[in-house]
Amino acid sequence: MASGVLFDAPGPRARTRNAVATLIALAVLAAIAYAIYARFDERHQWQAKLWKPFLQGETWTDYIIPGLLGTLKAAALGAVCAVVAGTLLGLARLSDRRWIRLTAGAIVEIFRAIPLLLLIFFIFYLAPSVFGGGDYALIAVVAGLTLYNGSVLAEIFRAGVLAVPRGQSEAAYALGMRKHQVMRMILLPQAVTAMMPAIVSQLVVLLKDTALGYIIAYVDLLNMGFKIIPAVFFGSLIPAAIVIGIIYIGLNMSLSALATWLERRRRRTRRAV
Amino acid sequence: MNDLITYAPALARGFLENVKLAAVCGVLSLILGTALVSMRVAPVPILRWAGATYVNVVRNTPLTLVLAFSALGVSDTLGVTFSQTPSVNGFWLVVLGMTAYTSTFVCEALRAGVNTVPIGQAEAARALGLSFAQTLGTIVLPQAFRAVIAPLGSVMIAMIKNTTVAIAAGYLAESAFVMKDTFDDTGVSIPIFIGLALAFMAVTLPVGLLSGRLARRLAVVR
Image 1 (cartoon, each protein chain N blue to C red):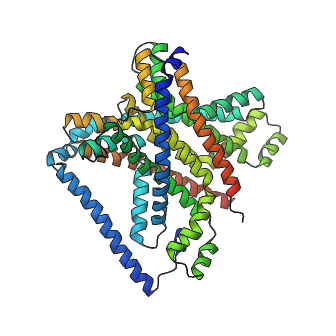
Image 2: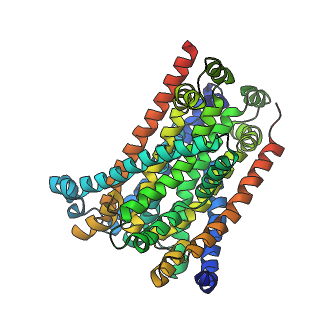
Image 3: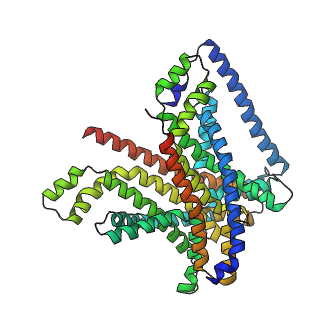
């Protein structure tokens, strides 16, 4: 049901009622906005010196853009590794051999159930004692993101492969293809196309989760905004939070828009077939 | 294994904090999420706009940012405090951030549920003379809730796991920090990690099973 159908086209009385409700809503929103403004004013958050750094090019080139690159690096590495891990695990769960199926199933279930931050902490503290000293923040973030999102993606790939009509693989076997050929040439391409919107949505989750690196002091956008910039430009935490918030929201919304576009395009091609 | 036994009481206290956070945030985000979905389907355009803006902004912000902001921004910089006691204040700041974040996912799940209710239901309700609030509250939302119990269960499981991020809000009583603290003390301990992971599974698995069972039992038969 489209949300617009919960109410009729307004008649004269409903129009008045809606107008009154609009006024009240506006008043409440204005009151909230004013409360925030007054609170900022009281705590001296409108001082120009707090906001000015964000109009200067050096703040962007020295802090914000390197931070953004840190976030994008973790996200890109995490996305590539998670897609690879997800494909392998998803295929392993579809294997004909029982022990491969069960092992992959156990891995997927376990890493989906563990809170990602605990996993990142664990890898962050485990790595130095296994590989010796060094900075493992990026590795811990990427490995954590890979294990968690790989497990989620495995379920998405598996669902995608199972959703391909049976006739497709039967036809491929009838043509004399081998098992791996059927998977690689027939099932996977169709599964990936069908599941593309879900995969991209999961990548949005992955991008948001890179911010967990902040907690283990990985230098990403969040760390720049909440620790480094307020320390350099004393007290400008709130402007920095707003700026990096907008960057995160912009990134995630454009990825989500991509998912929506892919979904629409897929529906269109389905109809064409 | 000895590490796990030594630190078990501290870890258990920490984990209890996670459970408490999850319980409070679960209830509050269900309430706020319902309010948000009511705004998003309301006949007043400005309410729809306000609800949609809030959901899209908060949902696309990393939870770590939301929680760090609720501690460093809202509390430290803007001076909004819930209590003079730091630990109590910290708890409610986490609740504030987690509820603000989780309620957007509750809202989106419920909105999907509203879309599953056949159009005839709302039309019949209006034909009986019910107002918008009555249509939504007594006809549409109850059916919407029953349609999305399983997705709501997933939202709640994610929320329970997210309580570990409370550390970003400087709330240091919960188990993720306790685990980090013991690792700082004694070095990495695999039994502690496994023990804590099992504790989380012991909470999330029943929630998943329960929501799955409830979803089947309460499904609206059409």
